[in-house]
Image (cartoon, rainbow, N blue to C red; front, side, top):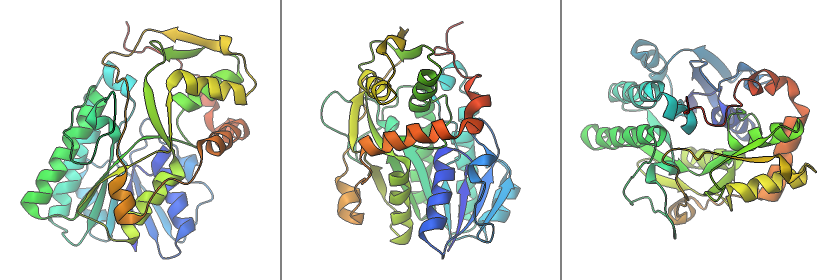
Length: 328
């Protein structure tokens, strides 16, 4: 089976490539990445070159995308601008990548209906929920420019499925953590700030809640969809750990033997969601999927990875430390 993985040099995409090639000897992967924010070619060093190839390019390039799509079985679209803080400062790149990019992919699939696709979305498209959890059929109510572009992408996907009978699955996953995550995101930022005894910024009172999944569990869910040919669905991909941001930061500090005085409360993000939570019944019933990596183990492994891979993050860490980039 041949996959086109878009955005494969980013955090989740690169982990998916490593995971898939390790799990199945029958998979070949073409990685299309524009090498924008968060993408690092180093994420895929030591990969099996016999079953992997890299193409530098943008998913908005219809000619290039058409050439690549016609020769594959499945497209897995990770390509996206994904950091909420940056979307608040300027959302234009998010519209370009997350909406216009997916439109290009969809138009290409119209011409190649034998090709299936997985659109990687996010639980953030639902907005927040005080109690309970969202099912796949609940309405979308995004709260920030990033999640609005991902919700718009879903609407395009759904319309193309109905109008053109395309074979596409949408996945909505909770917050990921693990190796190779760009240091602008919460967990790697906390680890690296703590390592250098720098202030650790927490938005608002730190009581916003998130669910978490190790990136390898997320990759496992996607591979299950592909291997079971479970297309034409929407799947929530759940985590197995829920925490306030403040409790999460304190947990990491404790593991790193650092003092909580490093915590610094900063002005809250505009439009901050108080809690994300999704229901996992569908993917558990259809694919027998549940996350298996306990957070207690996964977070220790993640901390160790950053401590052991200084060359990977040292340049990017110094450039992303502003905790409130939307403030002039």
